[in-house]
Image 1 (tube, rainbow, N blue to C red):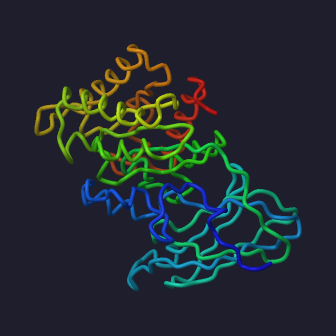
Image 2 (image 1 turned 135 degrees about the horizontal axis):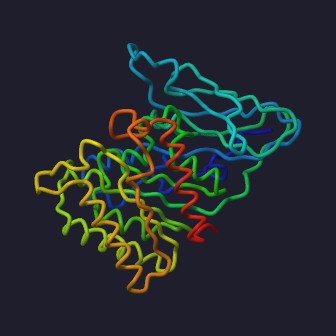
Length: 330
């Protein structure tokens, strides 16, 4: 089988900048803080989904990616490719890091539909793919789920891209999660709400707020109004799209400690939840809130802030359950 263009096989994509999948509108970067614009260059959550014929032995990729420093203790793991089928990881292949490379990922006999997670932290760009024996075709497209958030949504401290909570929930629900999490960001930046409004999607989740405690401190009244404004701007492009807000998960150091404006994370969380409930009471019937405080315990936090693999799994399961309970799943 000849080399094929990757575009029909890519999932989790938002925008393109040339041949690179990116996670912010490249025509509107000037309104974004520099740190968010930089994080948006990483193709977090972008993956390949394909159906293989029964006689297909492997999928071969041509790709380019950043290479880790020679002294990186995890250098051998940086160019890792993980093959999943449904909710099960079948195999991982680790290619020798190189700026331009080719890698073969073996497939089990019998064919089927598969998801291939890429080494997203190395900003990979798939140049082409082909079947080794047999044939490949793009997998059927699933409903697109836009997930906006911070480093927790981006998947920090999950040991593999496929273990972040949006990836977990996406598998459970049969959705195509588009990861719009920005480490250090998601502070209620209104231009990002307008970006979301312009993206097509059948479902939206907002999961920000913890960086409004210290990174850019907010008071509770300010975050209440920011949440209302953020939702209002998203609604300009998605007036009837189901929208779930996940309020900040447990952060022990911030729960009862005032920030520079005197607000605790407990108070900020309550303000966000109140904003959503007030909007719903005012007539937005496709809007709901999932309180984040009790979804995790300190044992589920790798560093006092970010979930470990177990925490991500619990969070993804809780979000999936909430979306089902609200009737928001397509």
